[in-house]
Length: 221
Length: 221
DNA sequence: CAATATCCTGAATCGCCGTTCAGGATTACC
DNA sequence: GGTAATCCTGAACGGCGATTCAGGATATTG
Image 1 (spheres, helix red, strand yellow):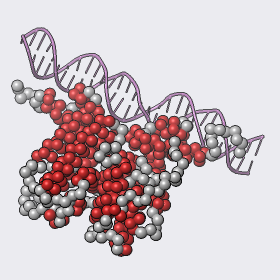
Image 2: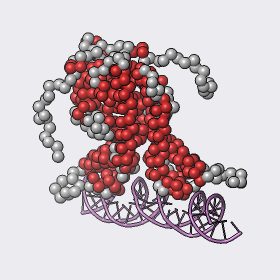
Image 3: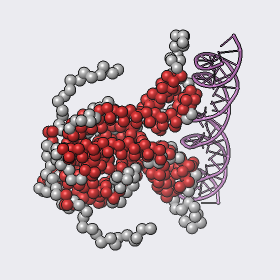
């Protein structure tokens, strides 16, 4: 009730939230292998013991952190995809969301970690499978819609969905690793070109959308 | 000189080789995160101390192991690619080598680990860059050759090389993770179809080559 | 306000490896 | 054959962290 407590901001839940956020942060920064309880505690501004108090175990904290990132991704996905847009438009959104322009930027490194974890850990494997299935399914839906509405031509939609999803993974790896041959700025374009080719679309249909007047954000550094 | 020593098989170099081989094995089996000196020693049939004696450090052993895998890959690559074959034939070889049919099977999981490592470690990043550049370059050469000899049609060979390389990475991830949508057996096909499309080839030209009678190697254990 | 449940912390504890070490075997060399 | 270099080993050592713990603060409840 009183404004006395400055450190224990609001409720214990608030603290818990902070720790969870810190876990996400640390996970992205150091990866599964490098994440320490101490890092999380430091970033959240509390003691290591509290991390364990709330999450029982380091793996627990990281697992929940991963879960929250996953949820965010799903949110972004459903929020960004206008359900009544044309297939071409939605395809472009998918390209931008999956590549780098969307709000869910910078998660690719994390997904890569999940892949490696999934090589040996069942839970990670399940998570990845779910994520990927959903993504592929979204893609597949758009493809089918495009074929139905006559704007796409595609002999084998399933194979195309698999290929386009895989291509995105592959490109993301290059980008995440800052490969000079695949700068972040080209990823979306490269992917959309392939998509256009796979779907029998004239390439320009997917090329850079009419460039929105670059007003949105204040000039970066 | 005597046949006395049964354990110390031949020379100390032989022992060292064994340990290196064991390192490769353990690395593939447990990954960077899970590899222990004790594992390597056990697999090589010696003491942990000897591992350190020869390689100074666990990371040293793993690094050299990785190097040897890399060398093997280069060897396989140059051995498998007939320099005077047609571009189409060489493209198929690339597809099979990079996918799973070749001798360099099962390394993909390892490369994935390298990717993740490369997110934070400069040496890994350099290794990956080299490997990838070489691979992409090989691909690019074949593409250019094909274009020159008139069998391929390709507007932007560089982009195509990047895309086909990335697609292979992406497909490999699915295969390594045993994604039911991308069984190992389909990977080569999926990739070759994309290659055919990218290069303006009738798909059947790259479809399953006449099935070589499976005689080459003695059945492995 | 007392009693109780919940939070939170600093200071242990404890297991797990990587690495070191002192010395025993083996080999190479003269 | 003797001596120095090289190999090799089992038995410590030591540090890094995850987890536990005993108890202090804080909130909740009646």
